[in-house]
Image (cartoon, rainbow, N blue to C red; front, side):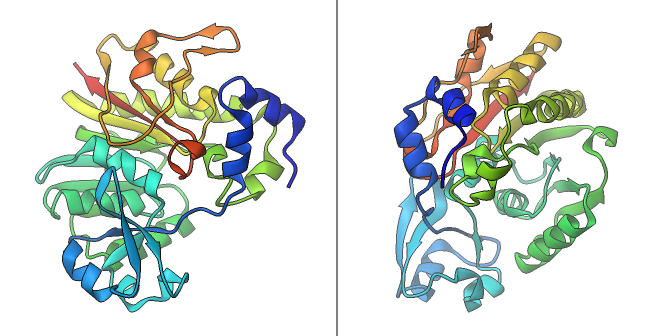
Length: 299
C-alpha cells in the first residue's frame, strides 16, 4: 500500500512519519470492553479463560484479547451482551466525560453505539442518554447494540444534531471525521484521502461543536472527539469554539496513556496555547488507532 505524496508531506511535519506509516499498516490489536450492566469483569474473565486478557491502562473494563478465535463477535458471550468489541482508543471519550447516574446526557452522533453503551454502564442505567444519529441504517445498528447490552436509559432520536433544543448536564460529540487515525482498520481511508477533504468536514464540525456547546448547562462538560489525526478537524475546531465563546474553558485530561503534544501551529496558523490541554494520540503512541479528545467546561 502506497501513501499519497501530499499525505506524507502533511504529516511529516507533525510526527515521526516513518513510525506513523509503519503503525498505520499494522494489524490492530483486538480489544473488548466488559459490559458491567450484565456481568462483572471477574465473571467474564472466568468465561473467557482460554483467552489472554491484557488490561488496557486507561479503562478498567477494557482488555486486549488474544486467543484461539479471532471472530469474537461470534462468541456466545458477545451475543449475550457481556462484552462489546471496541477499539481501545475509542474507550477514552466516555471515560473523560465521566457521566454519572441521574444525569441528562447527549450522545450527539451515537451510532453504532460503542460509546453510548459504555456511558450507560458508567451511569448504571440511571439518568437519561439522548442517543442521536441521522442515518436510518446506523440507527438500526445502534438500536441492536443497545438492546443486546441491556441499555434501558437511552432514548433514540433521528435528527441533525443542530436541530436538538434541550439542555444537558454532559454532552459527547464524537464528530463525523475523515478517519485518518483508523487507517489500520480500513485501508480505504488512504485511497479516498485528498488534501481538500478537511475543508467541508471542519465546517460541519465547527457548527456541531458550537451548537452542542449552546445546549450545555452552566457548569456542564462536553467532550469533543474524533478518530482523525488532522489538526483542521481537531485543534482548529476547538480553537474556533474558544474564539467564539468566552464561557468555554478547556480542562486537562489525566489518563494513564502515552500522548503527543497538541498542534498549536499548523502551517503557520497559530492557535491558543489552551489547546495544549487536548489529548492527541498517534497510532504509534500506544499501538492503537489515532484519536483526539478535548474536555470542555461551560462556565
